[in-house]
Length: 282
Ligand SMILES: Nc1ncnc2c1ncn2[C@@H]1O[C@H](COP(=O)(O)OP(=O)(O)OP(=O)(O)O)[C@@H](O)[C@H]1O
Ligand SMILES: [Mg+2]
Image (cartoon, rainbow, N blue to C red):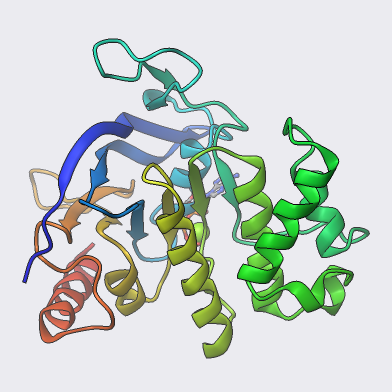
C-alpha cells in the first residue's frame, strides 16, 4: 500500500547538464528535479540512488553535483538557505564547492587524525561552543556505534567504521546534502547494515536532508531509495548507441508505492528486474 506524502520545494534541479573532459563528452543533457518530500508526523529526508554500468558517468555526475566539476553547459541548482524565502520559496543558487558533502569512491580520511579529531575538525566552521561540540561529537559516536573507536587512527578501523566516520565528517561539516559515491562497495554484510542504518539516521534527522548515492547493488538501491535514476548510453534516431551518459530512466519509488519499506517485496523485486533489463540495453 502506498504511503501518503506531499512534495514541496525543489531541493535539487539539474538542467541540461553536459560535462566533457577535453573534447570527450562524458555526460550529455542530464535533467532531473527532486522536491522536498513531506510525510505527516515524520521527519522524512530524501534518498536518491544513481545506477548505471561502469563508465556511464556516475562519478562524473557526482563531481558536477558537488561543484567539483564545472559543466560544459547546463547547471546544477540548489536552494540558497542564506537568503530569505520569497513567497514561501527559497531562492536557488548554482552549486559551489563546499555546499554539498561528498564522500568519494576512495573515501579518504586524515591518516594522522583519530576519529574524534577528524570530527572535531569537521566542526571547525560551526559557531558551537567547545562543550557543545564535544557533546555533539559524543552523541553521534554513540548513535553510530563508533564510541569505542573514538581514539583510533584510520588504519586501525574496519572498512565500515572508516566509511561511517567519513559520512559523519561530511554530515557535521556540510548542509542538508550529501553525495556518496559507492558507499557500500567493499563492505561486508555487517558493515553494509551499519551504513544502511546511518542513511536512516540521516534521513530521519531533518526533512531537508538529502542523500544521493551510487551503487552497483540494484537490490540495495531499490530497498533504500525513494527515487532512482538510471544513467546509460542512449540511442540516436538511427538506433546507434551514443557514447555519452544521460538519464535513461527515472523510477519514483514513492509514486510506485515502493518507498519506505522494510526489506524487499515481490513488487520491489519486479522493479529490480526491470532496472537490470534497462541497464543491459544501455
Ligand atoms: N579526469 C578524467 N579525464 C578524462 N576522462 C575521464 C576522467 N574521469 C573519468 N573519465 C572518463 O569518464 C567516463 C565516466 O567515468 P565515471 O568515473 O564518471 O564513471 P562511473 O559511472 O562512475 O564508473 P564506475 O561505475 O566504474 O565507477 C569514463 O569513460 C572515464 O574513463
Ligand atoms: Mg564511479
